[in-house]
Amino acid sequence: MSNQKLMGLMQDDFPLNLHHLRRRMISCHPDAQVATLTEQGVVRARFGEISQRVDRLARVLAQLGVERGDRVGTFAWNNQRHFELYMAVPCYGAVLHTLNIRLFAEQLTYIVAHAQDEVIFVDDSLVPILEQLASSLPGVRHYIVMGDGEMGSLPNALRYEELMEQAGAGSFDYPEIDEREAAALCYTSGTTGNPKGVLYSHRSISLHSTATLMTDALALSKNDRALVVVPMFHANAWGIPHGAALAGADLVMPDRFLQAEPLAKLITSERPTVLGCVPTIFADLLRYADEHPELDLSSLSNCACGGSAVPKQLMRDFEERHKVRIFQAWGMTETSPVATYARPPQDSQHDERYWQTRAKQGKPLPWVELRIAGTSGEEMPWDGQSTGEIEVRGPWIAARYYNDESGEEKFHDGWLRTGDIASVDEQGFVQITDRAKDVIKSGGEWISSVELENEVMSHPDVIEAAVIAKPDERWAERPLCCVVVREGADVSAEDLLEHLRGRVAKWWLPDEFAFVKEVPKTSVGKFDKKVLRGRLQEGSLEGRVTVN
Ligand code: ADP
Image: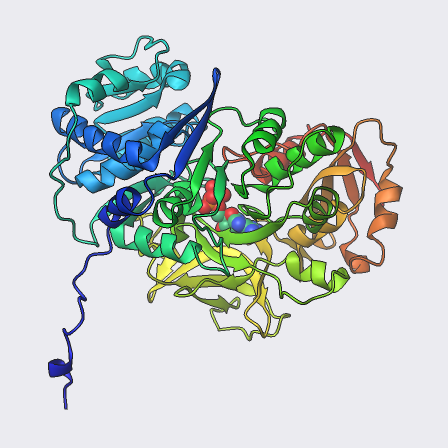
């Protein structure tokens, strides 16, 4: 018998859209605060006031002729105005397209044309970058400059604050929005081929941000102040701005002041409880904090770190020396981005085993389903040993790319192939061993570059370590470890080998080290191994020492 008659007795049609976040900011959290660092100091506004500005901004969009479903570009740092756009554009019914300000000119030109952005909101401090591209962006009708700085040679430039002033006060008549409509668009950084667009829906953002509030995830609450260092132009800043709107957490925005010094000072003065950023920024902060004991970072009891593997020594040093707790998350642009989160068992001893667990990427969030596929696609067991490519599915996982068929092979039978290699243990804890393209295939076996790096970085004098594959006649590939050592430290390749002995299998020991000044980084601050591989190939990789 069908249970049709037993359906429809709940408000199942209530749309999961960003109007709820917008309304909640006014009705439940009018006093939550956004604090933005500027050259003149910290500028503050409450959610109540911001909500009124969001209404004004919706009117500005209407005056600019933005239509339902149009993509609206942003070229901006993390600040209050970007947050206003995060709310206003999707609630207006248009699509917020966050442009990654660090991409190459050709990639940006491609992305703006592909997304058909007609209006781009740009921070005044970023005008010098955008004006160089403007002649190759014929489709853009208007640039809206945020801040009082120069508008440069940007054609048809208008000022944000002037438009807001003209838009007048009062509520806006927002359209009803189906939860499956697009809310935001973000392109992957395109390490291979053209960047690909991931189109987040109102539903996917609503569910993802709800999940990040859970205790076993980011656990954002109204008692938190979240310092958002992960860029708002990359994967919705991990959903933290949306989460804050839902939960009523304060947001602390560093704008363009992302170096360790201003960040450490901002933490000391603003006392955020939460911080989201990639490991390289955490590592810079740690070094700075070690050298400046007068600064106090201990308010940070609940940090999220991800984007690349988080070295366990980094978490340990921060926790033991500065009372800063970092938890690891894993995900990608295509997964909104948070898919797993690593909360450790509460009662465990802080021994080596505990730190091994902390180095894992964590359990899938509720609603995220995950499996690992072996080389012929077979599902591998969750035994903590067997590895394979992670495949995921769930309500905030991309089903395909926006207007691009070239990435079709990543999606099959409702699952997303992530390109990440991992094992999963009996408790559902995921441990990434590598990106498929970074793994080192030595004598038919795989060496995890991530694990090797983690162990090299546990050496007290090593600041950065990136392991790449070096072609080898006998073994096909062997590990080559690029290291950056602390200034003034006297560390030889032999010392590093000695440190690794007993920590990794003997056949994993690198054959060669390259003592480099800095590991090159991608547009979002990850180690850029592609550049290192290129240097190795063309013979320009510096400081090479053969050891094994
Ligand atoms: P890209 O780095 O390709 O520009 P993303 O920012 O979407 O794009 O990066 C996603 C990738 O980052 C994942 O597929 C994974 O390889 C890596 N990653 C993210 N978080 C972690 C983590 N905690 N540990 C290891 N790798 C991670």
